Length: 290
Image (cartoon, rainbow, N blue to C red):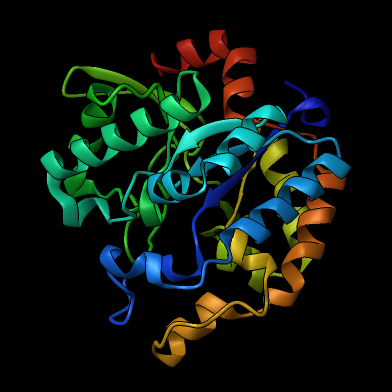
């Protein structure tokens, strides 16, 4: 497909400011309801941005957030956005193990489907925490009722990542189960695979480089998978105590995020995972044979 008409995918991991992973002072699930939530106001702001640019996105709702704020799920679905699952309790895949991961993934899917009255096809793990030693993850997702996943970070990463993983969307088979994987987008810069398109990466890199690397990815025939968290357009949200290094990664350049999102919505043709899958079903089927 020519790069000029290749659509990229924009996604939102719908979680709150206190859901940052792998920090000693991250509060447990039992304390979440006692904390001041910011997800509602921030997510509604994102929905307004998407409406202003006439863009549909995929919303990976944390089950806990959906359970507490079901009207956010309904509004997003009512405005034509795809509802997908981010699990229920925001736990790292490799900490849960297969049985608890499966139970969490099923709980989240059923909760979301009850709210919107429609099938939930997609999943994204907390922290992209799929690793080489958790390849049972894919079969467990199929067993839990999902059709596609967007959890694999195809490069080295602090809590996750599978080096040398295929970068383009493709079907994969694990333990006899087949699922469609949309890896998080990386691009080569000076011979090193880097992500430029979401989270701290989006905040750290200047927009001119993000756009340049996005066009490089599109030139290779891959869609760019963009992702954002609602807290990232809220520079005034509360902070968790953490090390200086993690504080930098978690909070650097928050003031720049909204303007970068607006430019992405303007500069890149965007769609949802669901609609990309529907449009490219035939080519994705043939990708399994490669």
